[in-house]
Length: 67
Image (cartoon, rainbow, N blue to C red):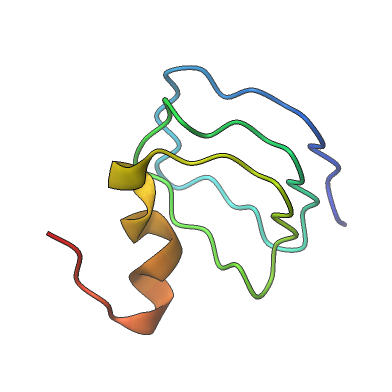
């Protein structure tokens, strides 16, 4: 079942092992969250906000290393 998280705010959240597959995470604020791995091909992320250091959680699926 898909979850609607539209405009939610994850403030200082450790999202380790959180699953967002098939979720609508449009306009979600992930800027202060950490340890997330989100597959942008399986999660709607339109206008979601991320901190630059958190971008690696979006690229994990592709085997891209960001240092």
